[in-house]
Length: 256
Image (cartoon, rainbow, N blue to C red; front, side, top):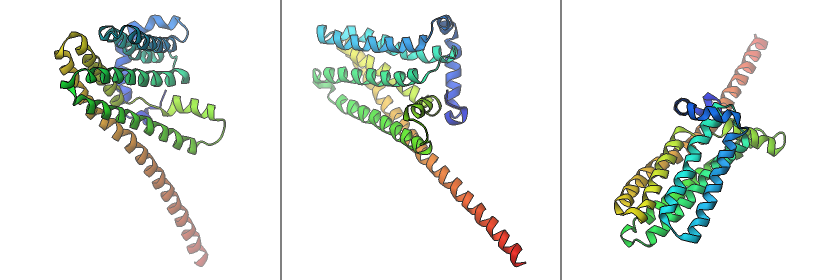
């Protein structure tokens, strides 16, 4: 689990509150080895079945329930892992990958719906900017991982990557808020294809809101990288200044 100083204040607080709320649900899972990882893989299974189901039936109403079930695995696997002291590098990686897969499939369905609904053509821009925002998050994460590898070049890459997943990679409270809003907005927009424009319009409004949160999340990720780099540079300069001061003191003593 990431250290508190890395996560800041609000992220661990959000996790503690969510884990406490879900404690009665997560407690029975402690008797199932790697229950959180199993739930994450179930999420993958639901997603792949959703893709297959759409290929066979082209039913948006069925996608509503399948996407909701897939997103619910994301809601519960984290608390199950933390409450039962079962956080693993594999589970952390799989959790992030599953979330992106669900997101991109949901956005793909939204593209299909928009193509069949000319009155919703502005939604194309919302979907494009959402995809660009998600790619920005992925790019920021990869750059962050590259920088951490530069700081810890020793040892094998797999050992480093495991350590990175468990100690450095953090799903911030901003990321969690964005995922929830995007999931709700996407499901509502898709529901509009089966249940009427009221759901679609509600989904559009929610998706616009998630764009602002996604923009802030991108800012948070990339700003954190630059602040971290600036902090390291300041530390190096301060160390150099201390070394120079020590040398000057020694010279003054010698001259005296």
